[in-house]
Amino acid sequence: YLQPDRDQMIASLNVVELLKRHHYSKPPLDDARSRKMYAGYLKMLDPARVYFTATDIQEFNRWETQFDDFLKSGNLKPGYAMYNRQLSRQDQYLDYALEKLSKGVDAIDFTLTETFETDREKAPWAADEEALKDLWRKRLKDQILRLKIANKEPKAIEELLTKRYKNQKKRLQQTRSEDVFQTYINAFAQTYDPHTTYLSPDNAENF
Image 1 (cartoon, rainbow, N blue to C red):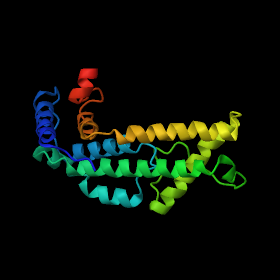
Image 2: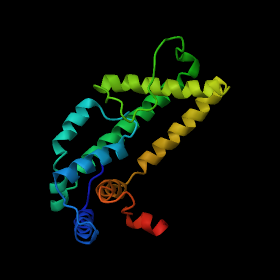
Image 3: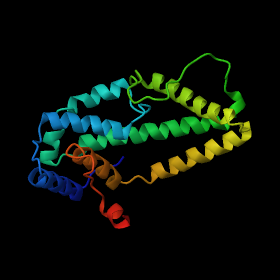
Image 4: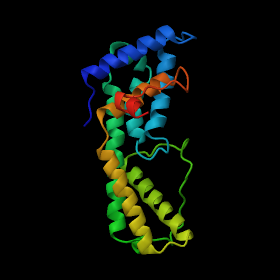
């Protein structure tokens, strides 16, 4: 469970002050900006709407107009709570997919008549975790089907997707508090200007 530290709290206050003082248009940090930041952050965390449920969104919605206040006081906890929830669900999905793949592609029933919406940017959130699991099932099935259509053999599909998901799981386990902070502060910075971004010290050095 990733948590913010004191340095990140101070950095967030500095970023807020810099943008408030020096941005050419001097837009206010208010509830309207909070709503914009919240929508942007949700999109960064779960663009395809496959990790959060409607229950999660209901829980997060109580913060929708409070991010301006959180930023002014250096309170990073709500932003971290949302990110941690996404990390946990992503990890659950990868475990789910790997477990299904371990049983073989041929164990999946392709005779069922069902649909999967691939462009999910505006799709409704899954009602609960049970509905989310069904979404994961269809998502994995869609990925397998695409490879089948590309004439991949079942064993090759299993190996390809297993390797892909194991690599994703490995990268997920390398997520640091600094990565969360960077995403959260960028959700704020980009409400001023889509080209305004914050880079963590390590990422700035790499850049």
